[in-house]
Image (cartoon, rainbow, N blue to C red):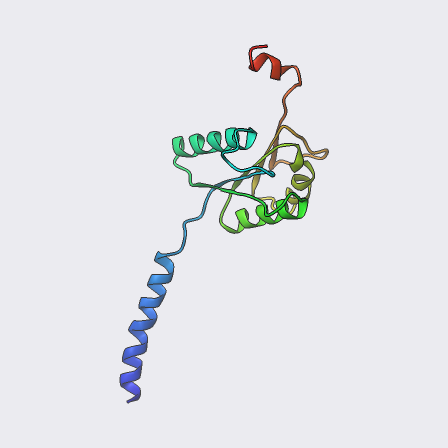
Length: 144
């Protein structure tokens, strides 16, 4: 009876291991964290998302977005943690609300690169790139 039980358990274990690894979601290399809005809100969240998708597709990278559960720094930090846990190597943070969030997570995750759009951190590190826009550019871009 003991031999029979071993013969049944071993194949079942391999089958279970094979199913759990093949069904696991693939890591997402690039992540976008929205602020309060969604990825199709017609604002900088949507524009940033479209840029992330285009870049990722052109460079054969996997990508995803995360929306914080509310408008708080704690929720934004949780979204960053979630993205890192799912394999993000580059995290895009669009908007001024991410300045303090980026300042807190950039040192915690030194192997992750952060792209902070329309804001800056006071003590940038090698894993943060800040992209800012001058206020007079908005009129030029819209054809003013």
